Image (cartoon, rainbow, N blue to C red; front, side, top):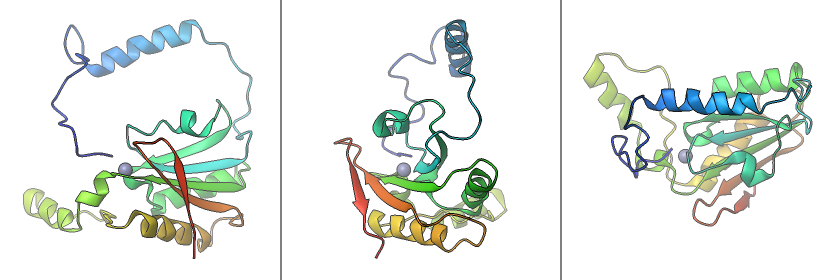
Length: 182
Ligand SMILES: [Zn+2]
């Protein structure tokens, strides 16, 4: 995620004209479906890998990692943080759908670097209810990747934690940098 652009800006004109942005996406789907042929794939990822990554719009996970349709599970949220819900998805990925490897991808210039847990307090003041979830803000992206690797490796629910690797994707260079878990 990024806080560097205004959600109200519309440089591409995507929101102008007849429909909403969702209308535009639905129209794109009609073109996609017109050229679509059933690849006849099983739901089990071909490469037996699950990738956990930030939802950042600048990270094209399939292109950046050379992934093809059917290759992997991709699990994304703000920060690529290993939350309980990510553990839920990884557990299903491994136990029901046969994945064996886990790759964690955080990135430079993440929006979570500009937030603090104070964000929760501000929400509580505004809406009268404190969210149950942590913001998971961080200052040191390398340390955040290490924490995520640790959460995966210590989960009692996962069957396979022997191949867990963590990376930082540079949004300016397009390159991954691996993080030493130690
Ligand atoms: Zn991010």
